[in-house]
Length: 564
Image (cartoon, rainbow, N blue to C red; front, side, top):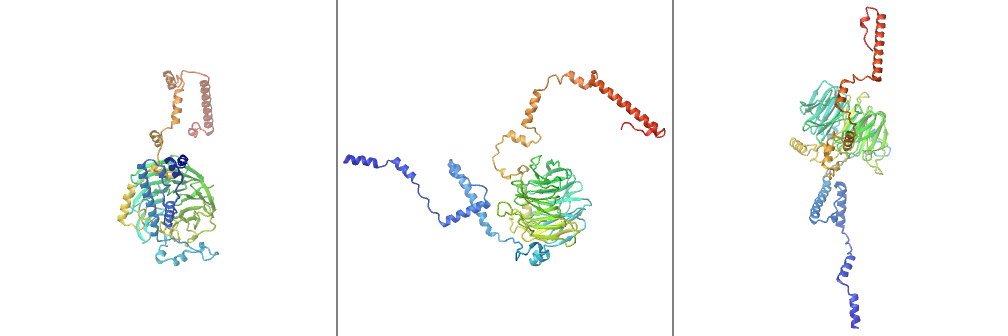
């Protein structure tokens, strides 16, 4: 019995290895999360979805302890920053509102500007005004913070002002054609595309620089984060100039004739150029060829506009079609018909689109916002409609929404009109990025910071997220791609093959001597035939001249010319 007990004890008692295996096999059940933990996880997920910068690093896949601890500290900092940005939303007290119809039969596009001015506050009603000017048609441009307004008349009238307070800035009469005008990085400098060249003026109206390589520029755009002034000429050349150094960065021929429209994508700083054949080409200063060509309309593209996210593009063509394009998928989303071609388009910070068609200005709502699916739904009726009170002879030229304001500026042939569009502007702004109420000291500090953080032209690409990624190309390949004039590797191989297979004796001293002499000592059938044809042609010419002299007589025979 004792032996049996020992045997049974040996069989039933597990060893240390077996005990460890059974312990590992039996995993402890996960504890139920408390309500606070679940709420915190939900907040982190929402914050990362809105303010996150990609997926977090999987720390369980990192074997190095030192690297794992460093990555854990970085991830904790990212999480704290994301949660701080989410918690800061409580400080955004201002909310944007739209016109709401009281019944299903009421239409907001029938509301007039007079009715809106009576319903809003007195301070907001003062922002609706009209300027009657004689040297039109005009084009208008707001600064990035929406504080200053620039007006440029086609007959040479330039004016700047603080449109909120009504304080005038400078006024110029250039006495020559003005095609376009744009503010630069702040309200202290602006560029004007005049009859022949592009001139840069300061806030007092003093000419400080002239870009003589810009010849007959029709459209201008300024890239604020790269300090690049881009202009496209009537000859089709697209030029980039660094306004901080004054150097030409790039010059590209579009090879499509005179351009019809120009707009920039605020997401990646790519320029969209419209052409006469209905195509829109996407350009970067790093490529001599367009990155993408889109057949946007069947007629000439008259106007282009991009939304703030850079995902959607609106194009208006000569075929009286207004088309919405998804730039990410490069496909057409919706198409709308207009009574006349859309000559100017502007998209506000909140997604409202203003379209100029003929003598009317139409504002569309929910044109870019997503519907039931991932793509925006088709809008059936406009949000607001405006016709000038000066009559049908007033034709709008350009439209533009004022940043951080419910204001739409309409520049037309008789001056400028400021319209109130409820819900157009962004209600909350980041003062560290753009401050509508900045002082002189803040403006100077912002200018210095923007110069120190200026982006290089090489960072302009369709996908700006490539910045910070690892470049796996070799140094030779990067140098080759940077030098656009250098031949490719395939071209070099073909040139070496041709050099190797070149026939011998083609470049000997005798051959060079005979080519220099023109082969005068060699007489063959081809040369005899050519000399005979040349002789016959000269004989016919002499007979023609003699006959004309006989017909005209001795008085007019001296006017008979040579060969025709």
